[in-house]
Amino acid sequence: MQPIIAITGSITPIQNDPRYAAFDATYTPHFFVEAIIEAGGIPLVLPINNQYPIEAIIDRIDGLILTGGQDVDPRFYQEEPHLKLGSLNIDRDHHELKLIKHFMQAGKPILGICRGMQLINVLQGGNLYQDLSLYPEWAIQHVQKSELNRMTHRVKIDPNSRLSNWMGTGDYVNSLHHQAIKELGKDLKAIAWSGDHLVEAIESTDPNVDILAVQWHPELTYKHQESSRAIFKDLVERAKISSNI
Image (cartoon, rainbow, N blue to C red; front, side, top):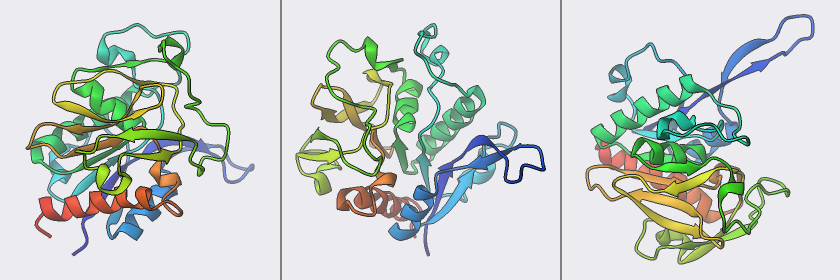
């Protein structure tokens, strides 16, 4: 059997035909769908909805991807909004925080991407730089101006981490974020850093919790970078093990 991998969705207005009014649509970047299929999993997009009980679906899903998107509301880490804070979606924050809690409790694997990594950190009591202008050592272009499927800066990898299995002690990644982890949350370990010392990846130190999260976007580079493909293959394999598939 193939494991079912849930991918968090967001909401965007679309207008396919100018004769009709725009309407809201649930979406996720199709790169995630393709990456999971290639890795051997079955993708399932989860819409933002705080009405249905997470308990009703947790037993039917084998792994979770937390995708990128809006900034995390700073109220979740007891801060006022900075002048450079971007767009928020409080309903999405609540929905995904519940998903993370239930997947952690169930011991099922989670892969956090960009915002996903930041949200995991906030749930565990950590906080964020609301904008990189607040980070005193900022020296690298973290919102790259080149094509998003191009690797732009190097990350240093902890040799004792899961990432080191396919990234060694360092590799190049793409980058598209203006927020970053400031203080790590409980039971989290930094396992990758940028050249200007920002946290670029984390793992859980709790043996009963299965989390890997990265700040970059492997869904945009998996077609031509083996280490990006390995991140999704790893999630699928972890899902098989946790669900005894």
